[in-house]
Length: 337
Image (cartoon, rainbow, N blue to C red):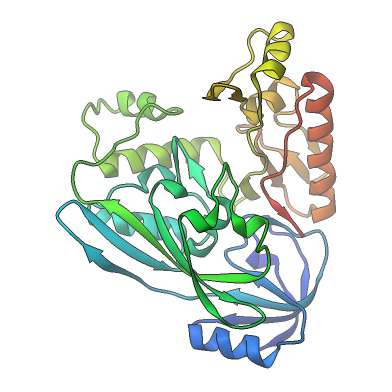
């Protein structure tokens, strides 16, 4: 382990924001992580994964620990299911492709989501009708202060829409080191009816899609709609889709009859934030180098030299504009630092 001072984090956040870490170190094994936490027990620490769900608005006055644990393996299987474990530092998309290559089903709809395996339970990431909670079994984590290792079961994680216990009760207390998923080996539950997947399959004349077909369709859709962070700085979807009461929605619908929605319960409705932002006239809006992406209004982008504060100001402008027009509050999905 080599601790570096005054370290640039520009290459460690997908927005490409220039910010400095007071100190920076990458850890590659559990033992290294445990030793580091013990040696720097009384110092302020900041845990960094893939940097994909983070907006840096200032320098980090702390020891930044980059969790770079690698490895993936099958830990159990039977005729129908397989339990696979991914280490926290594995690139999520690479991990998904590895499962698909072995015909393990369950993660294919979440192809090309940026980030690492270790951060997927924190956000309960999801796409095209599936979420992490659908296949998640457990994760192992280490307590930052005591170095105690703990297994968090599915129920212990308290998953919700883009929510988990790691964003609330135990926020900042644990570092996730590995995640276990239960995937199908046969009789796969293929999800094709969400978003543009069916259209993409029809375009390719695919009537009986494989896991690879679904993954390819999702990749094609995401590449068409979402900018590559390596080319244009972004963190994927910046905002959550708001869930509001049906009573509230009926008032909105009375004023805007064409409003899009999905029923999530007998009393609640989810409204696509991207639709709200686009209809508010902000798709493609730009102020300096901070902008709303021209193809996907959920995505905020850094056109070159935008600061984190400029992107944060833009996000607040988007929120205020949507609230004023629709009386619907949209929340940031991204962790603002």
